[in-house]
Length: 306
Image (cartoon, rainbow, N blue to C red; front, side):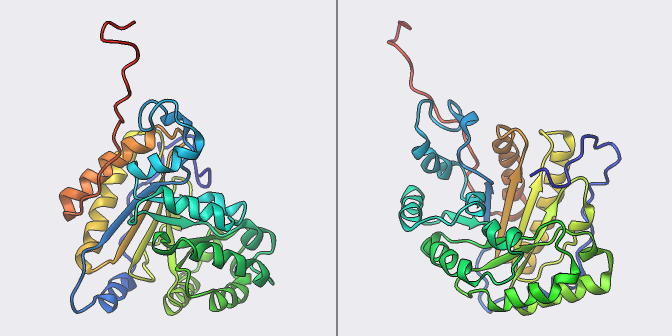
């Protein structure tokens, strides 16, 4: 994720803003009479990480096996491949067979809908998309719509119409990028209230160069966070601490699900960050998600090394 990435972090204030006042209200209204434990889902944007061969993946495996081993390391994925094409039934079936029952796919809406047609007259694309996403069955998490950077508030009526017509069978989160969505607090609050009324989750994006896309406003009892790290720079760990503390507070208030997706330019850094973050979450919340681990590799040759 290059969106908001900066080459120099010296002047970035990485502190998380305070919660939006409505966040507590959303969680209070969604709290069931018999609360269930919050679910924590952590993952990366892709599973075809060749750089993990010989460490987090066994050496020598073929690409068709990558997802199976990825699902042993993470319990979710920000499924970017669906942004480029709608998968066919056979592909979706193979995905489901490669993972366990608790694994969650969070598919990104096709760019043909979000970027090419810009949500306009896209029903003929939404129907096959819904069919494909719904075929993930219990492995379907929250899909997400990433709006183009130039898609601003002047298109709000189109966005509202799209969300009203969007199939209820596919839970949806929405990522806003144009600065004017956030520049006017009155407009921002109106948009957030619309998402809340339509049961759509606002994506919270933590990137260095755009601190405005971090409103700390939950519109459903689901937190969907896209985190852009910087090569295990010290600020990555400081931000992990801050996020763990904030998410622990939301867990205490009754958040249902947390999706936390890690973007690192070097994918070898993502498992290391995940290990640190998951341990912080375990200590603060008691939620246990097994961290990524280095897979023991088979010994080559005989006991004498030849």
